[in-house]
Length: 500
Ligand SMILES: Cc1cc2nc3c(=O)[nH]c(=O)nc-3n(C[C@H](O)[C@H](O)[C@H](O)COP(=O)(O)OP(=O)(O)OC[C@H]3O[C@@H](n4cnc5c(N)ncnc54)[C@H](O)[C@@H]3O)c2cc1C
Image (cartoon, rainbow, N blue to C red; front, side):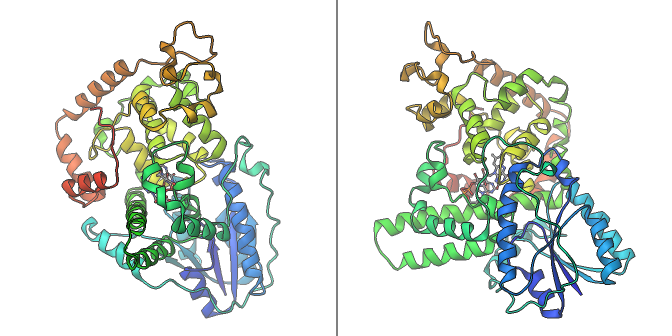
């Protein structure tokens, strides 16, 4: 008897646990809705909406094999204990999960329960993350080898165990998932994922790097695959191999258009690798959800928390038009492009001096693509607490001038500014006699930046700072040489704002 536990891998293709279980005999495909998980501060109904679409499609796909997806609501431990009582001992099959602290602890408790009850839990690697990695120097090669392996085909047949009844799939607005109903979530399901992968490879990627930092148009030209990867409707390997295949085809066409598309798709491939790199950090050090990577930064911001600043940032009312437009757009759409995410965090952490542990769960709830490994690593980077990354303080006015010069995006989300002349749209406080009901800047950019710079510099002076940073780099840092990184970022047209 084999139970396949679907977690963040809602597909039948490239699914090693399913293939192995189906080969061995009677199989029960299971998804567990754990109410306690949905009470965590980083999870929201928006995530459930995407999962809901994906589970429906997964169930449909399984029905073509003559069975159904069994959905159960409750704690994983009690559900598995109940199944053990009904079925006797079984083998459990799943992918390894690199989730938040809550799922990490649940998996530890479940592994113990399995050992105590003679249940074998077969866990398979997920995407490019290597569990129990001994040496960070080896990671890139291991990841790349895995990406080159053949894609695992869906089983040819599945012999379903029929004796277990599924709970009904709760609706998208069921109270278990909270009532955060404002805004919308991206559509889930594997067929939607494949559709957007194809449209990206065929056409949308043409303007990928040109628009990746432009908040008004990036939603169209970025791949938008992040949520599909986060919930596993597509595997990274499938996406990477499809992209490489496209590049091979284009290499046969010797024209500028093909070369241009190859350039964009290559930049996309690097990001897929970054993804695995970031999740690997959390896999190796789960504490990065709650502790600064560099201990010198503990205690730097915590006691300065300003609730009024937090509220203004959360609600898009800081008085900085691009910051506010980004936050409001995110609330409505559940996605915003990388640079604007970085800028929102930089503003909260440097300008408002808010502790990243208070702000990270809020954005996690808003990002439909919330992926703990990327999220917490990026939050720490953009807050200057890793000790191993360059400090970047984004200037919200410069970002606005560079990436929304005509203020079109700003006006879409901050209509209060509609009567402010275009030339003042980035700094409306400079417009004399404004009648717009829009707040004055919550802090002065230069003063706030100066304060942040001083505070960070002080912390970097503590004795042992460099040694500790070196140790973090050895364990979690990228192995790309700094020169190569700089070249890559120039090639990728990443003009970062080094205000420091
Ligand atoms: C503070 C902050 C928090 C973030 N939180 C998340 C998160 O919770 N989930 C998430 O998927 N991404 C996160 N990102 C990274 C990035 O912004 C998103 O992956 C990207 O915007 C998703 O859109 P896309 O799929 O169209 O990306 P594309 O540009 O098309 O990139 C393709 C894929 O590469 C990966 N990727 C892209 N950029 C990065 C990056 N900088 N670091 C790591 N992987 C990357 C993603 O899986 C993405 O789907 C965060 C970035 C910041 C600055």
